Length: 480
Ligand SMILES: Cc1cc2nc3c(=O)[nH]c(=O)nc-3n(C[C@H](O)[C@H](O)[C@H](O)COP(=O)(O)O)c2cc1C
Image (cartoon, rainbow, N blue to C red; front, side):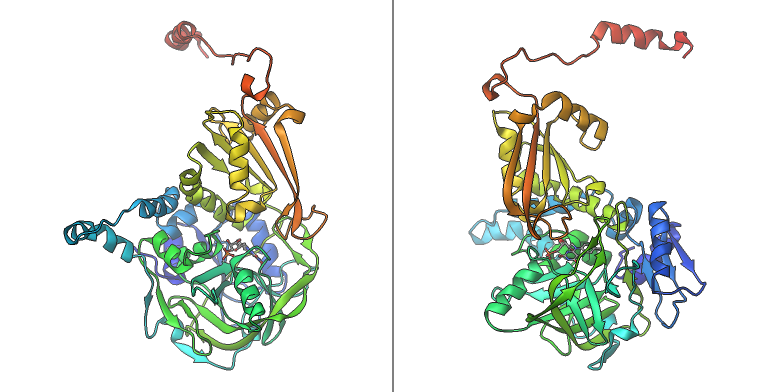
């Protein structure tokens, strides 16, 4: 069954025994978050809280907190398919000549199926109003020292003020009062870029905060899609079917028609206020920093919407699974630019921007460093603090194998690089300055003579064919 929205997703999760309903009254202030953390740390199911103190609306969380649930939501088991579809599109050549174009029509129409379609109305336009309040939503406070309540899984829609390319990014929003929030789009993200362009023009930027939608749209909002590629198109590519959109009522933006709630408004890039502290993905409270103010101008919502949220903290929580899907989805794209890359891993404990491990098929001296430099130049990978490059005989998803490679193939002085004063993730708790830190690259590939390794290259220990066959054939007789 094609999953069109959060309600379909819930049905599928229930069918697969991946969701539990909590009917006991629970508080959106700290209690729900603590229940969720206990469930997330013990690989528990998605939870639908049906009785939230003071609110009509149920709260859904941990809906993406396992690979199985992501397989259900995105309707695929091999997530590399997503990146592969994009690679295939870039390979498509559209030849000139009428007949040639006709021949290519099936491929072109397949591509067109991924485009979004603007509708007059949709489920999210069931109720529309220009008098909206954050107070009507069961927005969570997650940690005791958080600065307040935060929307943590809102898809923030903006449009590039010059190119018109549409973006959706999951950025948290701290609630200030019933119509104001603080938009935590970090400096390197697309939303912040759009906002900076508006600021230069002395303008406010129309912004919508979307709750719910197709699981593929939620995933796409978290995916590090390069500027220039419309996120609505990316969502359509992910689900092999374009998403439906509707126009907002109080601002000039298109939003997913199948969302639960759309909070319309604008961000004033010139009105900065302290956002945070907030208990973050790193496991630490990110201290208060200035971020721009969002003003609510209207709401569109279903009659019976579900508030979709998540809780972050020390890994491994729900976002780790989404990160794993991103890792798989983007592998074909990394390989398009760096064909020597065999595999790529962002261990969840490293909160994704902390460390990445890459295996390569090395052909020439210095190639590991070439890959590091390439990845540090690619979109959000530029924020990754540490890169470890190993040979393709290493299983990068097995930390024992990685540590073995690092400790047997690396000489610290020869095989590490440190680059100072580079962009780093805003959340990096260790960098001396916010947004500026250093990079560590570890080349843990086998060194060659050309790379200055003067000793005899030591042979890997390996059993010989004859002994292996002998032991294989006698194995049942050993009684082991
Ligand atoms: C639960 C969750 C919360 C997030 N919160 C933020 C945030 O507050 N600010 C931010 O810049 N990125 C945040 N991110 C990461 C962005 O969603 C991610 O970097 C995404 O690729 C941004 O998209 P963009 O390319 O549209 O900027 C969050 C991710 C998740 C999964």
